[in-house]
Each structure stands twice: as structure tokens, then as C-alpha cells.
Length: 173
Image 1 (cartoon, one colour):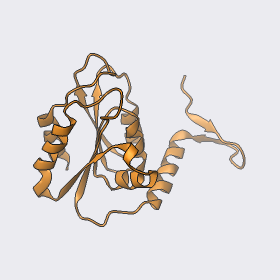
Image 2 (cartoon, one colour):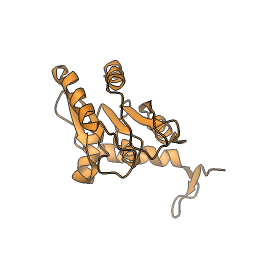
Image 3 (cartoon, one colour):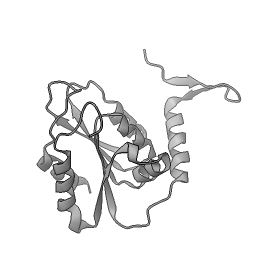
């Protein structure tokens, strides 16, 4: 069975629910980031092009199509490659994102920095067997949506349906 509680040493004499720890961490991080001054809404697209697996083969076309679709709607589209940003910059980018769009992968852990009610769209294959980020999103009061992709297995690179993704984005932003 999975552990639901973490035992903390020191002044903490009782078991603390791990979900409480996530919510506390989110609160601390969100209080320390700079809120955006712009009135533009932001779509943050996690780019895994430097990863070894689960890369979006048509990522350039996806970002370009999303940018051109929403350019007149006062919406900023940002492509995020983790190695290009400091932790503080990452925290701010995720906090200020209205939508996070990403393939399944560790980069989605950064949704802990998102403000409640932000949207998370995860590209996921039916073979992943993991609903970790869906559960994590619900725990953090984020709105999660999965777009299922076809691939031989969940480690493979894949192509995203751009029309389906844009249709979903239009329905939530």
C-alpha cells in the first residue's frame, strides 16, 4: 500500500498529510514570486526537445500555430525549456501562466508554482499508466485536461494534433 502520511521530526509530533505539505509549499512559493503586471493571459508550453524521450516532434509547428491563433487575443505564448531559467524565473513563469501545456514528464512538477484555477493540459499516452499530474493538479486546485496521443509506448516521441490542441485551448482561455 502507498504511504499517505510523512512523519516529520522535531516539533512536529503528529503525522502530517503529504497533501498538506504540497499546499503549504505552494503557498510559500506563490507568496514569494512577482505577479505579472501585464493584462495579457499566458499560455506556457513546456518544450522537451532536449529530453531523451516523449518529445513532441511537431513542437515548432505547435508553438507557431498557437501563437498565430491567439496573437490578436491579448494572449502571450511562451515556450519553456527548463535549463534556460533559474528557479525563481521558473516559479514566476508558472505562477503567471493561465495555461500550462506539456507532454507528460518531470517538467510538469513545476505546476506546484501555479496559482489555483490555472489550467494544465498534459499530452499523455494511454500506455503511461500514470495519472500523477492529474492527481497533483486536483490537489493543487488546478484544472487538468489530458490530450491522449498515439504512440507505441510512453517513452516514444510523438506528434500532437494541432487542431485538437487549439480547439481545447479556445474552449478554456
